[in-house]
Image 1 (cartoon, one colour):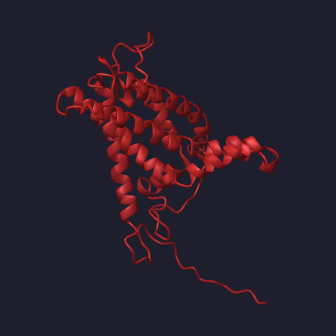
Image 2: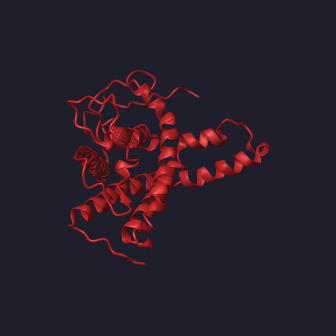
Length: 252
């Protein structure tokens, strides 16, 4: 069979495409939501106020750490500044989020079959993107935080007059459930529990764990967005209740 020469044509310029659909909607929404979350979380972290109300503690400030001795005297201290780098690092290096913000914030590429602003490609095997490989280590810290936030959810049912259920209790409980679904569906965790083996049938316990993580991983994108929005809402809820703008509804 003779060789067939396929003429691809010159490289597309930035934003050039033959697509007729609204391809720009998804990266635009991703850009707005992620940027909005980063701006709000940064602002909330520097407030160092209104992070607790009754038995409720904002997930941005949990655990409530004291100011360390090594903290520079000229730098404003907030417990959130010691905490947020760990979940932020976990999300920033997440396999799903990489694909999301590479498109929305770096336009690399903006979408499938759409021209990029650059022609070179270095991948994640060279600096600085090779740093993304620390994701597996941020996973360990993220798992620890799930248990910390789980304890906060338990404490949120302990009011001054005893056991009770407030709307904030449900908010913080749902928060740890969504964060747990995102964290325990991580690609790195799936590799950790079962990806090391060529044949999982010989390791039944690992196979069960692998199936469980895989079940969550199938909706990893959904868990990622729901947990991101809800953890921000959890902070908003506690903050506005603390400021007296919202009033917590006592259900039981």
